[in-house]
Image (tube, rainbow, N blue to C red; front, top):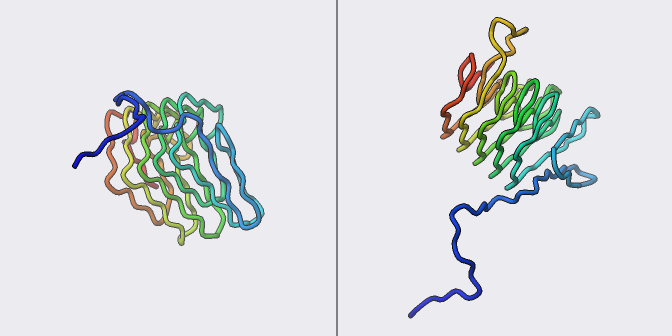
Length: 193
């Protein structure tokens, strides 16, 4: 017996399997919608909102404040199979900035993501803040390569330096099977407070 494929394209190793038009889904009990491009969402009314990013490609994003490609405040977050290349923030989180400071359960999950050549003052690739004890933060099977935290310890206020790959302030966090390589900056690749 033999198996044949019809109308197949020739394999090209340089072809990207990740879509080049990034988007994020904002999911709540009463409405759902999608943001294209840079994802920026904040929730201040106590609603249960989830921000989901699946199989996207954020390349060459720059933002003057927190989160070069993604900025999420007070929301559950799920990022899966997403590629971040050359994302830059002038403050925290070159690619991703997530801050959950309300006393409500809002878990954070990053799985199978790649962060390459991202930069910020601290949290060169990712800044994660979860102030509620019941929140779970999971970073699973992510690769962090050539990211950079630009702030220097001598110039940083309130310990805001370091974490060339991840700067994390959380009570319950797991970083599992991740690769950290070739990152630059004072304070190590992963800074946990």
